[in-house]
Length: 457
Image 1 (tube, rainbow, N blue to C red):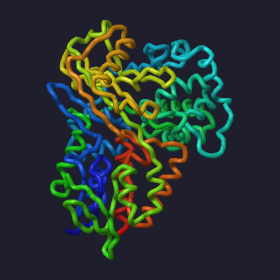
Image 2 (image 1 turned 180 degrees about the horizontal axis):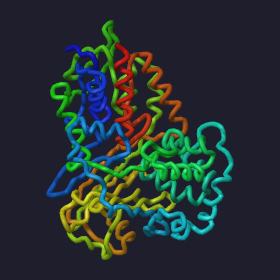
Image 3 (image 1 turned 180 degrees about the vertical axis):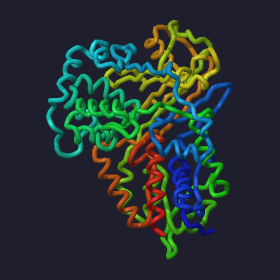
Image 4 (image 1 turned 90 degrees about the vertical axis):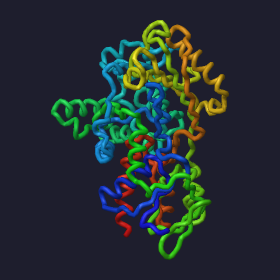
């Protein structure tokens, strides 16, 4: 079989690349090859007895035009659901209990989220020393600008929520490029935020201030997986499931792809698989890409979803968006999302639906715990956080051995080296391993990749 373009990997990045190739460039002779029995990768949802259960991302921020446009192309406009106002309250663990994160600067200063001295240190941010040369970790950046206390609590919790990572290991420029850009442009996060608010008051929020518009968390009625399954369905026979690629060869016509049940040629090739899979696939045609691809680590994540028959199962109501646990708390979990409040339609009326995450870069052994050990830990930690132990009457456990790519120091250099080497072999790389782990990032990268592929006719 011969195709114009082959895409290896049917996760959200691969599916979106195929969609953009057709929509933006009119290219339909595309085949997507997925090793698993379903498409979507970690973007997967299941609906059981009124529960919408997410295997991967809980949602996406609706400030990304590419994602909204892709949802529109997929015919999902009427399926969009935005987070309920009840989910406005967000919490962070300090001293073993959840503390409300106040959005008002004055209320934040008196909220007790940070020790008093750490709170005062934040006020010194406009006078912090300049960024040193070279790559800088997220933790070092935060410590330099807002102090060690805020870095260990606020910023570390943010890193936990996005990457399940260690803020002392992750590269600021790779993991949070907007923060790096804010400092570079304004010299201070405080001045950048002031400028953003001025733009917002002037009506310019939609065009983006220094950090961009904030956005609202959104999903679909059938969960995030609804986007993936709809895109997969639109491909029809151009999507081949249960079709692993074992070998890539260069030919006079482009590429020959081979596997247990596969032998096809393609003029152009996109690898939308994780970096560790891409390293194996490119070994024969781009040896120089292997080392930088293999050097991109991942963090394991365990997702535990629990459904409770009583909204007051823990005594007091569990209300808001959720709670994150910074590493200094050594709590045993990364955080917990209150799904029944974020998207009320994801839980039957009157029930609590909690989504607790364990593992991450600092607790890799959690992924190997037995189911009983995982549930015991979650029950114990949530009991301490919420004031009373409660046991769900339904639970679901999902293990991601290689959950989230870690953009450690030097990541952008490794990505540039891998992309250059793969590019010399005529291969485009795309996915969460490279330039953003969110669904929005993957869809944005996919559009750029489709544009590059379309030029190489």
